[in-house]
Figure 1 (cartoon, rainbow over the protein chains, first blue to last red):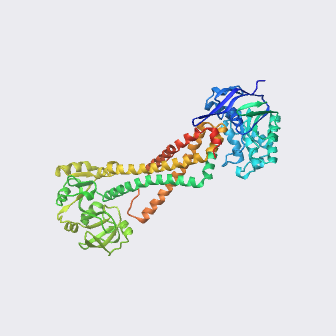
Figure 2 (cartoon, each protein chain N blue to C red):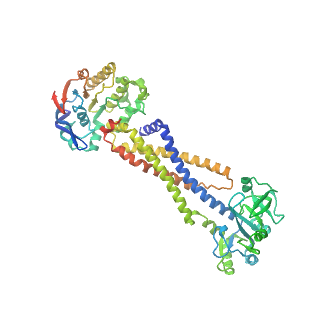
Figure 3 (tube, rainbow over the protein chains, first blue to last red):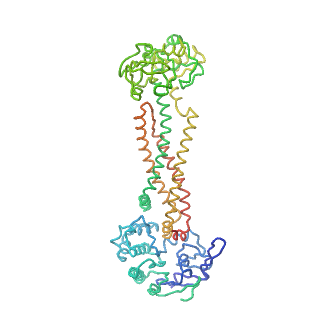
Length: 223
Length: 367
């Protein structure tokens, strides 16, 4: 089977004023469909940049990025946005729920943006699996960190993305909630063969994954 | 879903929403009231002239359609010749006196009560009656209410004391009436009149009568009433048009600037939320639509508030100044609404474009 993610000599350089800052210095990575991959490394090693590129939030400077058969280097912003809408789900460290909407609305807006309309069966299945039904009519300020992150996971998977990208999903959670969230991600991977790429600096969180890739200074140092 | 998000955003920031709505309401109110007050005064004045009941107005050469500006009164004997013209039923000479004291600015009509009554059909008296003495004055009921005037009271105009002999129903030319001879004495214009109000046996003969009067009085201003009424609109007054246009421009500019600032601040506050939407795959068009919808909803609320506020202010104006007319029309209400909506959307456009173009990574990391 064709890997779902292939990067070859992936580079990303940020221009800060007059200075070029290389965030990725040639990353080669292959991820199979249905795999649960953890990317670990110290702060500034480029793991978030890698995630952003794979999610289409930013473009690579050079190299190849093939995600579900789509070559990112040739895609413009609109193409990447369209790709992200249908194929990518994001989970962030800071949950990133819309504060003025309830949990239900935060999840529903993902379906609305995708344009396929509200799917009540999928909605019920996801919210049941994540155990957030009692909190659906609450706004983020009325939920704990763990609850918010589970709502964020629901939002990320409601549209059945090809890849779930999780950026330090347990970074703002206590141990108990961290374990709950990691178990949810594991369950999504095992039960639904959801491809998960999680970046973390926590070795315990990384241990939940099938495979760990270590990065340092913009490169993969072990896989 | 976008509508729900927009509504929640507005409710989430009630003070900002209220200020924006208020700014638009003031913009709408300013447009409607500026136009309403200026055209109201013009129309009300014209309606009162129409209310005299004349079919043709005869004025000296070069006279202004604003009666108070007319100089060089005409010999009153012209009335005798006008009455002889076929189809003329009655002629009423009137001498204008411009008044700027005793409760306002306006015209005092010096009238011959008998001939004026033949043209107008007579006064309806709320209290008192016609002139009994040379320095009697009749006031209309709106003037009496606004200035708390009663029959028998002494009023001071034109450097003389006048006794109020009667309070009459409004709508027959002026608000104040004195005897014609008294007006002539006060202005040393004995045997003179500023205008002749001519009543015809049938208003349908106005063109024929105008032609006949024109032969009799070449060079004189001879206006059928319908022509006079059509002239008394702001379209025929370039200076008023300019005044209205300037005030409307100021109102729209203020509304535009408030919305621009409000939406710009909102976009800055909600940078991370925009980043979240982009991470979900929201396109530039989606973001643009959401922001413009929010602005439109603010405009709609402001327009409704503006309409209601304008009606309330109109009531207040009339209660405080009963002689002041405020002409609110559906046409100008729609125009004010369109201006407010257009100004709002233009004001929101730059912030919306800016939001749509935000880099999603930068937006997500915004504190």
